[in-house]
Length: 351
Ligand SMILES: NC(=O)C1=CN([C@@H]2O[C@H](COP(=O)(O)OP(=O)(O)OC[C@H]3O[C@@H](n4cnc5c(N)ncnc54)[C@H](OP(=O)(O)O)[C@@H]3O)[C@@H](O)[C@H]2O)C=CC1
Ligand SMILES: O=C(CO)COP(=O)(O)O
View 1 (tube, rainbow, N blue to C red):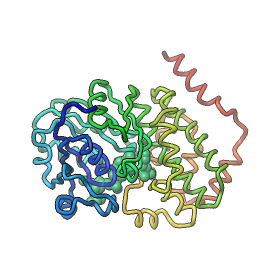
View 2 (tube, rainbow, N blue to C red):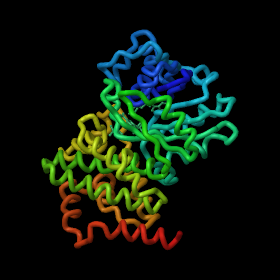
View 3 (tube, rainbow, N blue to C red):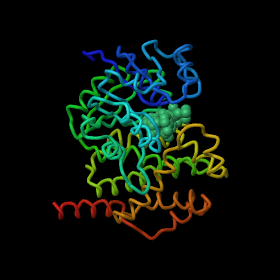
């Protein structure tokens, strides 16, 4: 399906960057995988493994790891950016310092920056000068790196303000194991991908507390309702939340032991402190910072997000998980759909 074979830079050699590098290598592309860790670069090039992040996997020899960013980027016109949200500004700063020609950046990260309340595509556009940036594309959806690296069937979506650019990223990645759709709603795709991590943390907590499937189904359904309310108020297409970057990613993250957010929540539910959990995870748990950002966004846009607020209290205000669940369950009576309908009505009035 992929006609042109090109050199592609994957920036970030954690679980997701490495798994995506494998998809690109399966499609015959030359993949330059940049890491800021020289030991890891040596391991990937000499042993074709990345034991810390994907312990069972042997990597294709088409994947070559680089420690030098300028060597990684030389002659490349597409970057796949796969670092945690917290590192995006720093890494874009390093790219900016060595990049000489305009480039397309496809990011695959799932977060919102607290305080600035920016989506990742917005951060990239802020940090990268116009003359060096062709397009920003987002790739998102239900896709655990552990399963993608085993070539298990996976579906994702790509979006951009320029759908031709999204189509090019679709062509680079699509194959018979990794099916890539397009979606023109960049706000919805980024909000869905980021905020599902909050609900996955909460689902991990209720599992850790020993509550059952009813509690998890409640969290996922009502979690999606509050994600859709906020996203729609921010300008997203509400239909996006019933797609891969919405319900799709919510399902995979709330129900899988691969999810770092679910696992972190599970340990919190079992009584560990946030500090203990994060110290032992060894990989990014995006939902913690995103909870802070979503809490701020809910206030800014005046949207009710009771699960996000309950989790915020558990993570940052010392509330016990059991008390947070009790508060959620004892709230006043409400209509299931009314709040989203109100948000849609407000948007229609503004239009
Ligand atoms: N894992 C998955 O299945 C999926 C992840 N994502 C998203 O992808 C993004 C990356 O996640 P993932 O790969 O899983 O995270 P990991 O924790 O597995 O890896 C993060 C990688 O980024 C590197 N890194 C961290 N900070 C910096 C920095 N300041 N400069 C350079 N490199 C840095 C890490 O290096 P070091 O080893 O030195 O810490 C590591 O190689 C997240 O936003 C996540 O939500 C999206 C879909 C699936
Ligand atoms: O986004 C993911 C799967 O789609 C990965 O989720 P975690 O970051 O919780 O592991």
